[in-house]
Image: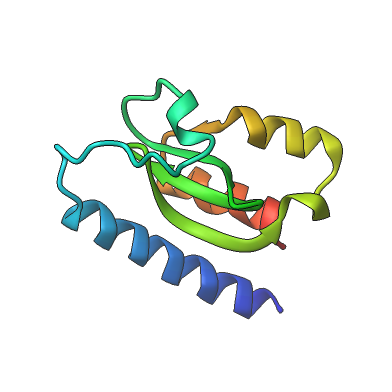
Length: 102
């Protein structure tokens, strides 16, 4: 199980790096993102909610939508995700996603 989590984390990080390198910096925020628009973060990532699932946002756009449903999480975690959690580094992002999605 730990190997699966480690492999998933490595794939996630590689995907995020690739998306970050490809994404155009002048792109406008998507109107469909739920929590990311409410954040004023200039850089980094936001862990929030999109379509009832835990998701990662960058520059107002959904980067990843996980399979973890908001209803599966404790109320305290739901409240934090509804506000949006600012993450500065990929390492911290990986750790937080493992917390919410494992």
